Image (cartoon, rainbow, N blue to C red):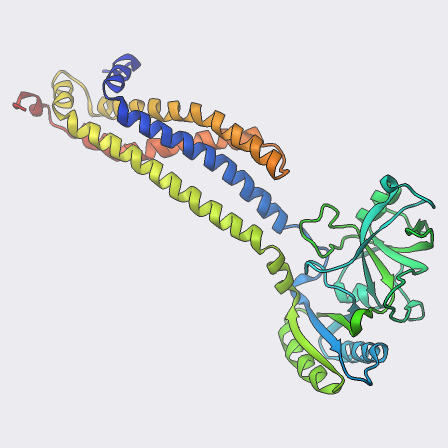
Amino acid sequence: MTWNVRPILSALLRNRTGAVLVALQMALALGVLVNAVYVVEQRVEKVSRVTGMDDENMLVIDNAGFGPNYNHEATMRADVEYLRSVPGVIGAAATSWVPLSSGGSSSGYSIKPDAKPADTKPAAYLQTDEGVIDALGVKLIAGRGFSREEILPPTEGDSFVPQVIITKAYSKELFGTENGLGRTIYDGQNRTAVVIGIIDKLQAAWVNWDDLENVLLQPRLPGYSNSNNYIVRTEPGQRDAVMRLVEEKLSTSNPERMIEWVRPFEFFKKRSYRADRNTSIFLVSVTTLLLAVAALGIFGLATFNVSTRTKQIGTRRAVGARRADIVRYFMVENWLITTAGIVAGCGFALGVGYWLSIEYELPRLDLYYLVGGVLALWALGLAAVWQPARRAAAVSPAVATRTV
C-alpha cells in the first residue's frame, strides 16, 4: 500500500498550527546554520593563515631602560650577543615590535619620486638587526640579509635607511612581481632605499589589516623611549627552558633596565585572534542549540500526531497498510513540513548573507553552503521523526475496533 501526498496535505491543513510553527523553526534554523557555518569557516581560515615564521619555537622579551646611566644601544648589542650564545637558541634579534601583537609601525612607499597617494603602497616597517631572519625563522627567497655593518644606531625620529628587505607580497604590490631584488623604493620625502632581500612570508602586527603581509625590514636598532623587544628562536622543544634561563639572566644583568615580561610568541598570536575564536565558538554553540530545538520541535509534532491518530493508524493497519507504509506516511508528512520551512529559509539565509557581506565586508555567501544546509536539515528532520514513525507503525490493527 502506498501513500500519495494529497491526503497528507489535507491532514496537515486541518491541523496546521503545529506544522506552521515547525516550518518556521526550520526556516530560522536554515538561515542561521548556513550563515553561521560560512562565518565560522571565514574565521577558521583567518586564524589558520600561515605566518611564515617558526611560531612554536619563538619567544619574545620586552626590555625597557629607565636608569640615568642606561645606554640603550650598548644594552641591546650585549643582550643580543648573550641570547645568541645560549644553548638551544637558533637566532635572536632586537626588534621595534612583534608580529601579530597588535602594536607596530607602518608607512607608505612607492617606486617613483613625488608619487601620488594612489601610487603609494602601505607597509609595516620593522626596525631590527642582522639576526632577524634566523630569529623569525622566515625564508629568504632572493638576495641576502643585513650585515652587522649595515645596522644603524637607534633614533627617535628619522627612520630612513639605505637598504631594506621586503616580503614577497609587498614586492608584488610595488613592482608587479614577486622578485623586486635590486629595485629602488621611495619614502614620503623622496629618499631612496634599495631592496637587498626578499622573504617569502611575514605578517605585520594587525591581524585585521588588509595589507597584513606587506612588511619591510629596516637595518636599524629600535630606540623608541629606550624600549624594544627581543625575538628569540630556539630548537624544537627548547623554548620553555630557554625562557626560564634568559629571564633570570637578563633580569639581573643590568640594574638600569627592567625585563617586563618573557612570553612565547604564540601568546600574541592567540591574543590577536581571540575575538575570531570566541565568535566561532559562540556561533557554533548557538547553531547547535537552534538545531536541537528544531529537531525537538519535529519530534514533538510527530509524537503528538501519532498519539492523536492512533485509531486512524489502527484502521489503516486493519485495511492492509504495512508497517513500512505507516513509517513512510509520517516520514513524507515531516518532509513536506521541513521542505516548506526550507523554502522560506533559503530566502532568509540569502538575505542575511547579503546583509553580512555589506555590513562586515565579507565575501558573498557561496551557494554550496546553502545546498549543504538544505541537505543537513532534511537529514535532521528525517532523523527526528524516525522514532515516532516507528512507534506509529507498531500500533495494532485491533485498535480500530476500540471505542474512543
